[in-house]
Image (cartoon, rainbow, N blue to C red; front, side, top):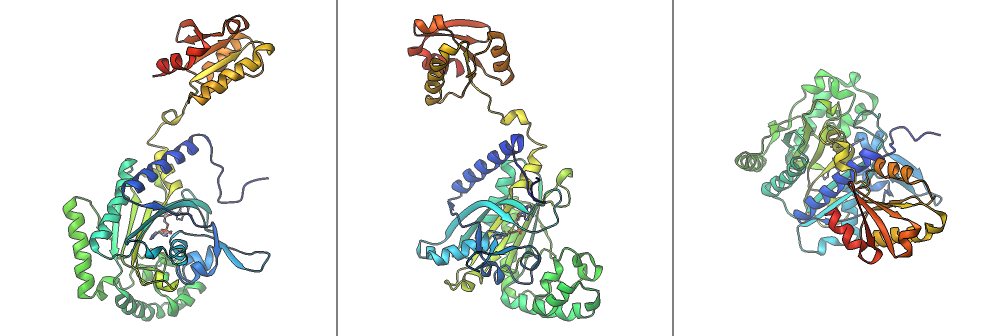
Length: 417
Ligand code: HAM
């Protein structure tokens, strides 16, 4: 039996890297005043249908859908933003002091073509800020994302775009429909459907986006209002002044329907990143909460792929740096001392000392070899003679000494320090 395509068994070095990534992300989230929220791994299909958009790749091609025994239409969540907004409305979290600052992490599911950095089950960490709209807040969120990459010393390029307000998007969308009509026959069947419903999604379709006529399609910047221009300019000036380098990419449309105004992506610049080099993607969304019948609060956030971080870190961190070796190895030489040896192991672990032992009695030399192999710093020999006097032999480096059980923990703690 093999695991399903696009999934992973995670262990050893990768699992240690994952733990490091998650603990660092949690620290940064707390430093930036975010509170954690957890939502179900499966949701009603409708949560994503209108929000992420029925014509997006994610909803139209990639959702894992199923009916439960009560014939409900459910999906494994493909992303985190829509469920968070559903949860905010359902639990009336919007009544708390604004802005709401929430972060989340966990598995997401997309039926995509697996390749390096792209899986069908992957882990995302994401943040959402709800209830305020300002180019300075957008800058704050972008700076937080940059600080995450900096914390891991991952090199990146920041791309930003401004998708404009609803009006701008409407005008641009109408122009795109007229433009793509000329190429209708060359579009894939799904993009032909999008042509009238949502032509923006043709721009980020994984197949159609490769056509030159899609690459040369009209850009959003030609439809900006004065207000759009001022907002985007303030954001750019702030980022420039604070020294965060970025490039403007008017082609960045982000694949999910809920975005308007600011959109951004952090792309890896390392040679090993492969084709799936977007590490963090995010942006502002204005109508999402209204779609869930909540108050009209604007939001901004980003999501990052934990596996893509792990791929980067594999080249930056050595496996040994993350290995937590055993501190003490208790050697049990005879059947009759087994119970006493386990008693010692329990006492040490209770005091926070990482301890291993051999419950099957063994020869001294064999036990020494085992202890060395797993990197134990200190060996304890729980022999019959020593135990009779409530003592054990402690071997640290080349030195051996008798220590009473009463003093054992404090003796070991000093040595381990
Ligand atoms: P997204 O761009 O679809 O945005 O995904 C965010 C990040 O998740 C990507 O940049 C990538 O690192 C990772 N990712 C996506 N798909 C895969 C995959 N198949 N395998 C591995 N990693 C993947 C969102 O999901 C939005 N909810 C982000 C957001 C939050 N926007 C506003 N708030």
